Length: 483
Image: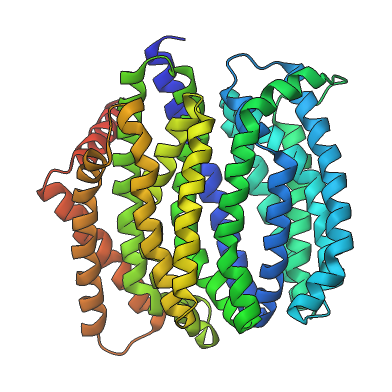
C-alpha cells in the first residue's frame, strides 16, 4: 500500500475508532449516571473489588497475543484461530482458580456477598478471550466500522439490562448483570459484523512463536494491571468499600476522556506504526503527530473537567457522590500525561522491542511501590496525589528509549505538549473564576455555561497563538468543506 493509501486508511480507521469509543462510552456514561442514582457508593465499591481480580485474570488469558497478532508482519487464519482456542483454554484454568479463590477473597474483605459474585462474574473471561482476538483482527485490518456498531449495540443491551435489574432492587447484581451481558452481546454482534470467524485450525508452533514476543508484554501488562488496581485493592481493604466506590467513580470521568482518545490512537496507530517499522523517520513523524494531536484534545478536556468537577457531580450523580470530587480532580491531573505514555509505548511495541517494554514496566513499578509506601503514611487523598505525581515521573521513563530508537526525546515531547497544556491551565482558571462569579441558578444551567465558557476560551487562545495542532485540524476541516 502506498503512503497516500496508508494515510487514508489510518484516517478512516481513526474516524470509526473514535466513533466506536465515543458512542459506546457515551452510552455507558449515561448508564453509569442512572445506576449511580439507583445504587450507593458502597455497592459500586463491592463490584469494583471483584473487577480488579477479573481484570488481572484477563491479562493471563490474553497473554500478550492480541498485540502479537497485530504486530506480526504476516498473520493468517491459522494464527488467529490458534490464539482463540489457546485463550479459551486459558480461560477455563483461570475461571477455576477464581472459583476456588472466591471464599478467601470474601473473607479477606469481610464481605460475604463477594463469594457468589466472584463465581458468577468470572464467566466474562470466556467471551473476553474471543473478543480479544476479534478486536486484534479488527485492528490489523482496520475494520473499525464493524467494531463501532458492535460496541454500540452491546453497550445499549447491557445498559438496559442493568438499569432494569437496579430498578427491581437487585443492588450490586445489577452491575454484575451489566458486565456479563456486555461481554456476551459484544462477542455475538462482532461475529455478525466482523469478517473473521475461528476455523478448525490449531498450530502450537504458531503459539510458541508469538509467545516469544508476547510473554514480555504479558509480564508488562500484568505488572501494569496489578499496580494500576493496587490502590483500589488497598482502599477497599484499609478503608471501606464506600471510599473505594468514590475513588472508582472519581476516576471514571477523567479516564473516560483519556482512554477514549488514547484507545483510538492505540488501536489505529499500532498497525500503522508496525507497517512502517523499518522506516525510523516515518515512525518518528507519526509519533510526534499523535502526541501533538492527542495532547491538544485530551489536556483541555481534562482541565475543563477539573474546573467543573463539583458542578458536574452534583448535577449528574447527586449530593451523595460529592465525596468523589477530590478524587476526580486528582485523576484529571494524572490522566493529562496519558498521550505521552500511550504513544511512546505503542511506538516501542510497533518496532518489535517488547523487551524494552518489559524493562520500562519494571522500572515504573519500582517507582509505584515507592509512591505507594510513602502514600500509605498519609490519608487516602494524599496517597492518590502522590500516585498522580508518580504518573508524571513515568512520562520520562516511557519516553527514554525513543531518544535512541526514533530520535525523539522527552525534551522535544514536552515542547510539543507544553503549548496546549499552558492554554488548558489558563482556560481552567477562567472557568473556575466564571463559575464562582455566576449567581445562584440551576446546577444544569451552571454546568452548561461553564462548558461553553471553557470551549470558547480554549478555541480563542488556540487560534490567537496559532497552535500547530489547531492549524492542522482547521486545515483538514477547510479541505473537507471544499469537497
